[in-house]
Amino acid sequence: MNNFEIILLIIMSFLPPVIFAIWIRNTEKYNREKWLPIFICFIWGATIAIIAALILEIILQIPLSLTFKDYSIVLFLMPVLIAPFAEELTKPLALKLKTVNKELDELEDGFIYGAVAGLGFSATENLLYGYSFLIEGEELTFFSINIFIFIFLLFMLIRSFGGCLLHAAATAWTGYGIGKSKIKNTSFLKIMPFFIIAIFLHAFYNFLVTFKLIGAVIGLFLALFVAGFSINIVRKKIKKLDLL
Image 1 (cartoon, helix red, strand yellow):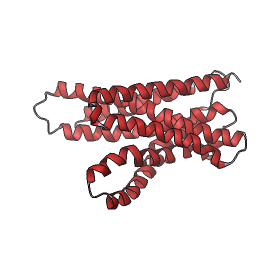
Image 2 (cartoon, rainbow, N blue to C red; image 1 turned 120 degrees about the horizontal axis):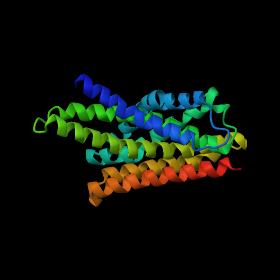
Image 3 (cartoon, rainbow, N blue to C red; image 1 turned 135 degrees about the horizontal axis):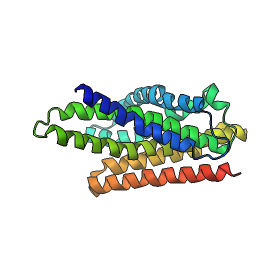
Image 4 (cartoon, one colour; image 1 turned 135 degrees about the vertical axis):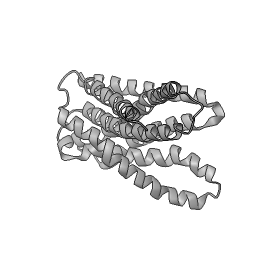
């Protein structure tokens, strides 16, 4: 990779999630969240959460590999079962950090902090996928550099919309559960329904983009619709709770 590609990769990986994080934070009209806990949630998602999720996915892949001799089954179960569980477990733990947790004083706060943690995660995920795309693309010598850069930009734009909004929407629900549990002083088990919603959203999105039976293009468009629809619901919930 040359310097231009590296700079482009970093910008395309982090700029959209940062813009989305500001957008989500500003959805709240009254008593908006402070920038420090927003920043901490984003950094948590972009660093600790993604490292912990990768380690957990590797650990959980071992029993799958031992159970199923057909590795294609393992390749299918990883994105639709293991990854959603591992990632939706590590991302919302940002809300347990002291600086963030003390700011959970309104029900909509959990949605916001959860979404921002998910966006931080998606930023680093974009970086990793984009890097892999560029490295593999260097072998595709039949493409001119201009066409290749265009394809790369299209790839990153799709990830920036679908992946970013999916991570934000899914983790927002667990964040809401954590915030609600703290504010209403309820049992930790009360978080579980929202955690399940997060896993289901994430798993369904991954299923659509990886399952080829319905067609790659159709699956991609359906996945993008799910991501956009899901974040729209989250923002409506934030606006509604903000008025209470």
